Each structure stands twice: as structure tokens, then as C-alpha cells.
Image (cartoon, rainbow, N blue to C red; front, side):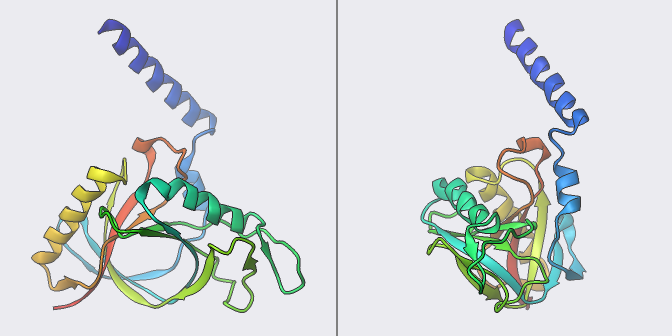
Length: 206
């Protein structure tokens, strides 16, 4: 027991040191990244917020199962880091934005991952992906209810947050209008306690 306790202390000290050195700085990365704009329409019990998003351009790819999430992330990252061609046949880098959308959340159904592209890109100006499994589409305007949490966004953890969000909506003026999805604000290598996640579902007035 003493050895395990000492290892945990060393891990904690090391993590604090990395944060202090700036080697792990998820909050700074979030601050520097563009996020889609939205209007807050309502604030519900339990920290649930109802937002209205406008149309957004996204790069998306399929995740046949939750185990493929890391592979899907690398596929989309490859697109924005130069795996693309513009109208002149040239590759270009695209700024990373947050959040990354994954859904549906906490189900066994095939999932889809989305990167929201910078607002200065349009469907006509966005470069074409080299990978045929990456699609550029325009997400329609939508109203969503969102609950923020930290830690893991997989398996039982995602299922628990999904249930919490739906329980709050059941007692509110807003009805779910689709399957919940996850909004992930940090890269996969950021330690779980430091991650910002959100569970979100499209809603409509009752």
C-alpha cells in the first residue's frame, strides 16, 4: 500500500510540474482555438444551458465503433494539417478549432466525428480532403441543450452524463429532438481530470 501511495504522490507531483512548465496546458489551447459562436437561450437546473448555433462548416468522418475514435481523430487531423488540395492543387494547413463533436453518445450505434472549420472558410473555399473518408458538409442551424463535465467521455461515464442531461430536460420546457452527442475540447493526450467535455442534444420547445 505504501508503495502505491508513493507512486500516486509522484504522479501527482509530476503532473503539477508539467502544468507549471506549460507542457500540459489544455486551458491555454482552448483559449487560442476558435469556437463556433452561439446565443444562450435558457439556463436550466443542474448547469444545463440551451444554446442556439448558426450554420457551421464541418469536416466529418465515420466511427464504426467507439474504439475507432482515436483513428477518426487522426484522420480529421490529417485533413487540417495538410492532407488536402485547394483549387490550384496545393495543400494548406487549417487552424484547429474546438470542440470536436462525436455522436451519438453512449450507444452501440456507429458514431460520427466532426471538426468545425474556421468561420472564414466556406463550402466553396474549403480545400478538398485527400482521404475519401473525410467529408466537408454544412451543419444546419440548431438549438441544443448542453451539460459540461470533466474526466472521461467514454462508456459508462458518457452514459451517466447522457442520463443526467435527459433527466433535466424531462422537467423543463425543452424536449430532446435527436440523439445526444459529445463536444470534446481537448486532445486525446490531455489527462482526464483536465479535460473539458460537454454532452449536448438538439432540443425543441414542448
